Amino acid sequence: MKKPVVLLGLGGHAKVLIDVLELGNYEIKGYAAPSEQKSPYTIPYLGKDEVLGHYDKTEFMLINTLGSTSNLELRKQLFNNFKSQGYLFATLIHPKAYVSNRAIIGEGVQLMAGAIVQPFAVIGDNSIINSNAVVEHDSLISSNCHIAPGVTISGGVKVGECTHIGTGASVIQDIQIEDNVVVGAGAVVIKNVSKNKKMIGVPAKEVKK
Ligand SMILES: CC(=O)SCCNC(=O)CCNC(=O)[C@H](O)C(C)(C)COP(=O)(O)OP(=O)(O)OC[C@H]1O[C@@H](n2cnc3c(N)ncnc32)[C@H](O)[C@@H]1OP(=O)(O)O
Image 1 (cartoon, rainbow, N blue to C red):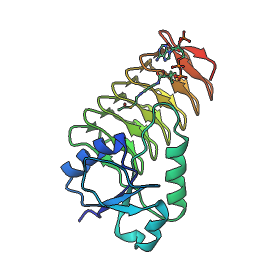
Image 2 (cartoon, rainbow, N blue to C red; image 1 turned 90 degrees about the vertical axis):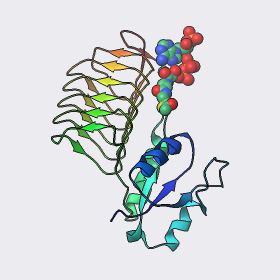
Image 3 (cartoon, rainbow, N blue to C red; image 1 turned 135 degrees about the vertical axis):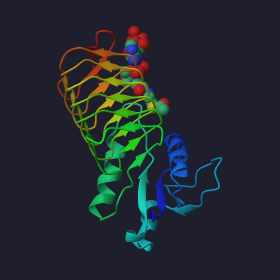
Image 4 (cartoon, rainbow, N blue to C red; image 1 turned 180 degrees about the horizontal axis):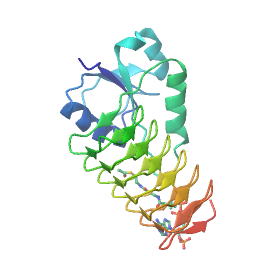
């Protein structure tokens, strides 16, 4: 039996996650957020994050619904904060994602429709592999990353923590991208990237943050 889930937030990324949850027949108990959200759903608002302390944490799993367009710090903080209190995050895989049996998928990872994760790839905790993104063989996506829709990560690539690879970007084989990097939408990364850089264009070049 799957445990029911509680959503942390109810923004745009939550909408896509709710589809995955419904396809997986999860019961959604409600959502926690700083305030009640206007939404097209009838999912109950439970209260601010602290309200979860009133429930037995072994009886449900959490879903981190914070997406990102570049900065992953909040998503990471939310995950680490609840993990340090002993909560479990559900790992969600859309039924139309493909994941090799030889890939390793961490806790709280979200693989959206059309995502492909090939053999010996590793996806770290709390990372998103968004719609139609490809992570090729032997690649590492570290924790708290967002691989946005339509991205191609070629074989043997290493991506550091808290890195955002923007919509439709490509990374050629065997590249190393360090922590806290932002790769702009549509960029093509052909050289290693050191930490905290923002890269745009074809081929990708650094722009100051
Ligand atoms: C389901 C979902 O929706 S998931 C969300 C997915 N979204 C993404 O992945 C978005 C990724 N983000 C981007 O591509 C952003 O444009 C960033 C992070 C690269 C830059 O954002 P900002 O720092 O706010 O830069 P800003 O918009 O001010 O642009 C600065 C300059 O860079 C240019 N620029 C910005 N993004 C890009 C890009 N992807 N490629 C080429 N040039 C770009 C701008 O045209 C501007 O040029 P100018 O100074 O000559 O006018």
